[in-house]
Length: 156
Ligand code: FES
Image 1 (cartoon, rainbow, N blue to C red):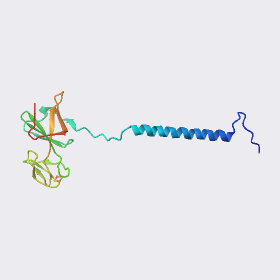
Image 2 (cartoon, rainbow, N blue to C red; image 1 turned 90 degrees about the vertical axis):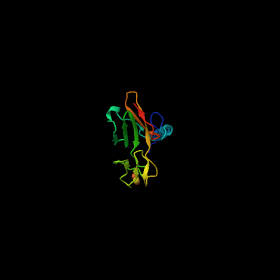
Image 3 (cartoon, rainbow, N blue to C red; image 1 turned 135 degrees about the vertical axis):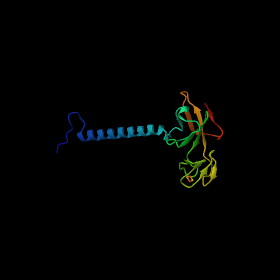
Image 4 (cartoon, rainbow, N blue to C red; image 1 turned 180 degrees about the horizontal axis):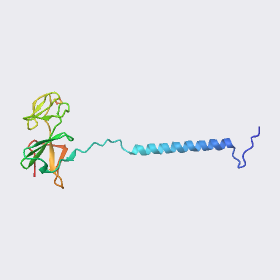
């Protein structure tokens, strides 16, 4: 067999080995760079905002208790005052229903007063009230991350 080197002086087998080596090194470097960049990006889960606009004050008739299904809250209007009560039962998180008087949980029978206080269990504590403010464009703005006392109203 004749093993003469090609005219440029690099044997064909060496040329392929060199190329393969360079490709492997390049791939390893690129993979390390991607891993390093990925390490710099935090693993954070972004929760949906706890604030939402609930429309104009005039959308709610005087004396109304309106269930906002998407947000699982009740919006209450009395005269020119507004409050917002959670509709999430403090026992295991079922949605409570408005009853003739107060609120009733259909899952295990907890009963809450009009003020959201527990009248009968198993709910461990009352329904929280959320902060209601007015946005710059005159919409009701509810913040479910801000729990307020039951006697705190928005007056418009
Ligand atoms: S979830 Fe409401 S009483 Fe159990």
